[in-house]
Length: 269
Image (cartoon, rainbow, N blue to C red; front, side, top):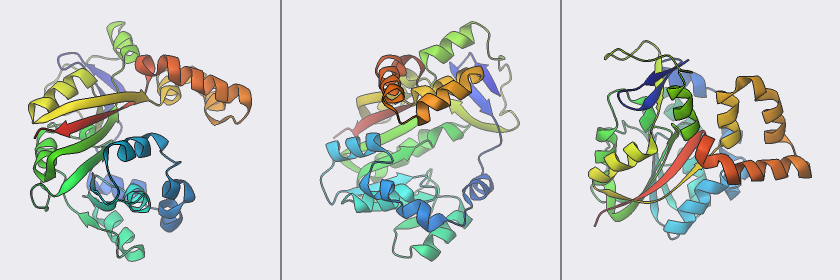
């Protein structure tokens, strides 16, 4: 269920609170090694978009920290792509499981709001779907990003997109209004307004470089569940027609109805 927080211009998703225990349960798997070392993660085809930006702004051997690394597939992937990779997460059991199988992988149990790394240590910080889960805000996270990044280092951030389509639905009354001031029960995440997020992060010592909304079909599936099946066919189809539709929708509709957005920032010198 999504609520419209009109005062702060964002959506609130109610599912279950995203505690360390929640993530440990969600990430539990008997196929962790296969999940982490799959060929698509190794060669970057699982997330072509992310690899494009990492390779664009970094040189081989650069240090990358993933804050909120989950099961560690990107930490492993960054190493395979030629970077010195680190990861942190607060889901203790997940980290323990990773370390049993990959003792040399530089993954640690830490809180992204209080990192145990020295100042100006990393060339890049990757935050993939993290900041939206903190009801109290993400200023502590970004302050730590600023501290551990080298001057002119890069923050690559992804988050759920409070898109123009979702803003239109909110204005049309398609989401119940959130009128309280306290955190609601089962708070899971926010769908954040990118302009507000960019302005806020820039005030903490960064400059936006570029951005790209994505996951248009996933966004439409969530916003129009009645069309979930035909949209899934387009998303998963391998014939020429479905590939053409995917490309056309990504090209023409992503800025209007994408589910997520990737933003690249550079730390001020």
